Length: 372
Image (cartoon, rainbow, N blue to C red; front, side, top):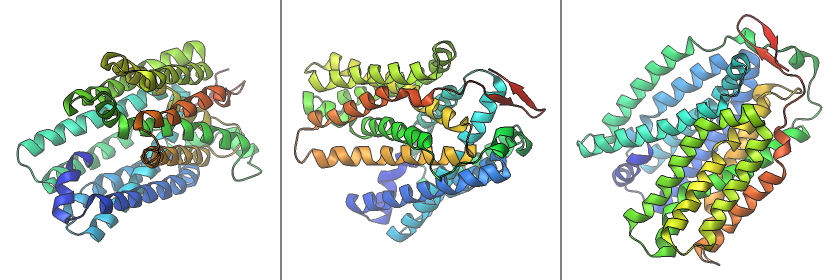
C-alpha cells in the first residue's frame, strides 16, 4: 500500500528521487533496529506479545507517510514504519516456528506465500483507490484501521508465552553473541536475499534495456518472477517434508542459478522470461527453510537467533540492488546479473547449514511433543 503511493507522496512532499532514496535508507535503518530489538524481547516475553505490539505499531505507522508534507516528516514516518516492520518480521517468524513445531510438518513456506499474496492484494487495492481518486491519506488511514483490527483478532489465536519455554533453552546458552552456525545461516540468508532484492528492483529494467522492448512487455518478467515465487512458496513445504530442508535450499538455489544464467546469456524474450520464472521458483522456498532452522537451533534463544539471521538477510536485500546500480557504471546491466548468480551458487554450496538436529521438540499450548 505504501509503495504504490510513493509517486503521489513524493510530489506532495516536493522531494527529488535522490532525496527519496536517502529517506528510504532511514526506513531500512528503522527496520534493522526493530529486528535486533524484537528478537531478545520475544524470547523474554513471548512472540505473541511482540507480534501484537509490533503489528499494531506497523498498522498505525502505515498512515504516517500519508500525513507527511515535508521531507523530515516523511523521514520520521518511514523510520517508525520501518521499525514496526522489522520488529514484526522477526516476531511473527518466531511465532511461525512454534506453530510449525506444533503442526508437526513443514508449513513455514506457506506463511511466506501469504506474505507474497498480501503484497499483490495491497498493490491492487492501492491501484484501484488511486484510480478512484482517493488521496494517499484516506487510503493509508483505511489500511491502518484494518491492520489494527486484523492484529487484534489474530493475536488471540497465537501460541501463549508458556509455549516458548523449551527445555533446551534453559539448559544451554550461547558462548558468544553470534554462534558460528548462526553466522553461517545469516551469510546464506544474506546471499539469497541479495539475489531476491536484485530481482525485485532490476528485473523489468534488465529486460527493457537488454532486449529493447516496451515497458509493458518488460513488466512481464517481474510478473513471471513474482508468480513462480508465490507458487513455489505454497509447494516448498511439501518438498521439504519429503526431501528435507537441505534439498530445498540446495536444489532451489541451483534452479535459481540456471534461471539467472539464462537471463545473462539469452537474447530472446521467451527464454529470458523463462529464466526469471525459474529464478523466482528456485528462490521461493530457500529463505523460509533458513528461518525455520534458525528458530530451531539447540543453542541460544530462538528469537535472538532469528533476529540475527533475518537482520543479515535483510541487509543483503538492501545491498543487492545498490550493488547492481554501482556496477552498471562499469558493465552492462545484464552482465551485472552475474552477482546474483554467484550468490545463489554460494548458497547451494553451503545449504547444509539448515540441516535439522537429530531430535527436535514440538511445542504446543498443552506441552511438548518429541518429533524425531
